[in-house]
Figure 1 (cartoon, rainbow over the protein chains, first blue to last red):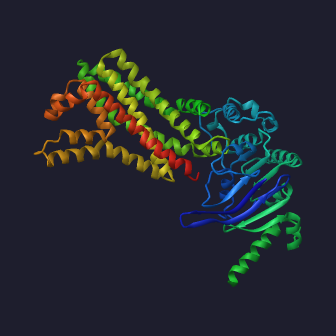
Figure 2: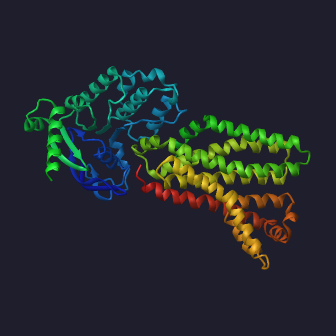
Figure 3: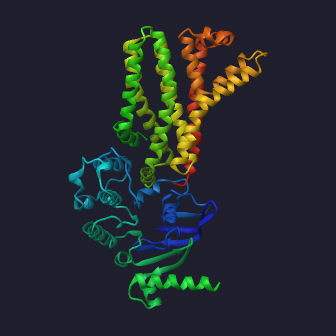
Length: 241
Length: 255
């Protein structure tokens, strides 16, 4: 379980996160939605310890993550853009990350097999297309059966078949006791994959509840339309002010 | 740390730029010794080229590599390893890869062509300069947020230590030529790693006579083992200071 309390971050003059307060519970999957530059990636990076917040704390399973790195054993992360050292081979990347993880008891190579990456172990990273690199990133995130999965735009750049494989995988893992945190701009994907929505705008959380409730509240049947309704509503509010 | 460094080192060693660097050094070294029959003169010409090329290549390659590995460092940061581990793994893999290129390009041929005390010092100076300038490049990289700025700062370091600093020293010596300046220039020289490396080798080549009275003073100072230890200690300090400074920034940096 991840508890984010009173988290603020500014980059120079820009206030990216404004005292964010949110819990991510086990067994649930969260869609992080928001316009570009609303602070989604910054929030994720704060949870991963890549960005150090100005104020506020993040704790994972009851322990504060400040000056601690062991909690990352629990996390699988798939970045938005995966770039790897040019001359490294696919197999070496997997070997290296396996070397770094202490807990090797639940290795999950399903995605490597389904993406057929095991046939490409000797290919060098600079010869790979963007989509294949995304496949490597996805396989790495799932490799250690982590309790917490953080996926930053997982389906961007993947071909339709790969998208389906990845979605299948996420859905099958969802049923186990996992926390999923997914950002995406593709609403139909999130509608399928997640149960909760965290809607961020201008560094503030405007909505944090189940997707069903959101749909009910806005009277829409699809997540995309429901979100659009919320965005419009906010736009009107700001116009009045 | 070794776990990461092993893979990163392998990656850099296969990099074409590093191979080209080793080859370039090899060509320069062997041509210097084939063009000049006097090994002393050849070493001197080689010294002048090395003092320009080694810092420049080290500082530029490191900065570019750091920014090209940015997303990879991000991925490593999501793994259960500390930032210090990642930082030192990156530092040692780059400096060891460039040192390997230097050993192939300069150390091995020079030991085969002209085995002498001055050659050994030339090799040592080049290796130490590699470590110093890779550390300076890390300082430039972590202190900035984009690649272009980082390269700019890194180049400024190089210009400063190869050109500007010497000009300043000359200016000071010229302006205050009426005063005894030996100790002052010794201090000033210690503040520039390239000058430090140059002086050691010039003294080993017995060219100190060219430097007049100051040269005699240096000879007196650097000629004995204390002087050598002094200069090595200073070059090590020149490595550790930017390296640890940059580490402190990197540990707190938003990636």
